Length: 572
Ligand code: SER
Image (cartoon, rainbow, N blue to C red; front, top):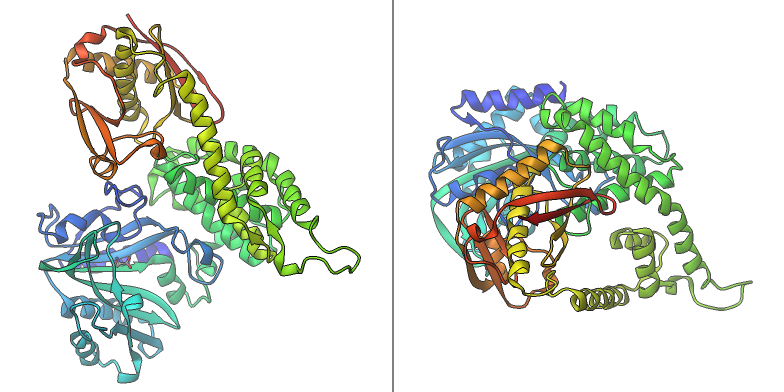
């Protein structure tokens, strides 16, 4: 049975059992405390806490997920960064009995997997949580004919689901393992875990289940690992037959990268953009190990888009953008990767004992912080790649030294920037302040027109004009520029009030305020809001109302480095 059929059969099964089928939400969640959607329940989080679900009490979905927690394990038989999660969910509808029965029926009756090959884990209780051994689940499994020796009791690590992000619903779980691999996780949400990890019983109990499509396909298709399933085979065919682990890592990471870019993320050195850069560069590094030619990623990318395009049409509609972004990153890193690897070896080999003379023992080899920083700055080696290289070759990575170099560098460049511009402003003249407010309006307009992944890369504001850098892979077309211009002018006309509030950085992030360089901020930050249109962490100053600005005009749009565009604009 192919994965496409499994996806459909799962959703149909639960639809027939009274569940509303909800489409996958974005891989970029609205919850500010998580970078990516890592579980099917993410989009339903509020409904466990009593907010009314617009879909009713029982729902099912197939959710695009991205996880970095298992990135080191990718390459083994079952771990992935990108995965599709099948799940059924209930918010105050049914609980353990129904959830376990339905899972049993789907796996062993509908799909006819051999029940004698299955193991069922349940929470053993350990006094740490106000919950004892999950006897109820044990009894339900037994009632379905599961034998005592097929039921395994496990602790909090395995059978207690913690919330996604800083807080949220959580509770004990029971899992179905088939031929040694965890396939389905059934979570019984009974508690709310707050930021201090304190548990409070939830008024309304809930069910949250998650089953990776890839692992289910592996069990159904009787494969030894997820990479032999039809979800990977066509993609792996694009990668030359050689070191298996490298091929797997490349296939997984490119899949993940394609989905991330389809949602507007671009490679950068912060947050989501950094994760994207890291998986792309990691894939390239493994390609290097296989001696693959430059540009080897493109056919793989095309295959991923072709394979998933029908189920996830956003891949097809963004195909050009995805290809451009990956090609650019490949060119950028490809050029320096070989040279960087050579340098890395030089750094380390220099210290090897020569001619059998007793020198440094092999396990004392070290990559010093300043060397690592040089590789990072000059060749774009992410820290994690250097750590991996070191681990592979049994070399110590001087992490503290590297962090120190990073800090030193940041301080130097900040001092340089602050001399010229106070927070991007040349002075605090009336005209400059107007341009400053216009810059905030423009960033909000850019995000509305080009996508929420746009952020500020830098600004330079004088009494004559504003100059503003932001991430975007291509030249803006005329339609985009005039849309941005119109939107800013519209907001100027609306005569919106500019309001300044002080709060902690955490609160500001919680409110969705945009910020540029996190490390620059102290405990308390100022947040400037312009109506509902813009919200930014910023030192100010700004005008009182947008009508003071006059007419906004974009004069020039040009490249300002790879993946960065620069706009020069004026107020007339
Ligand atoms: N949230 C749980 C998981 O992702 C069940 O869906 O495993």
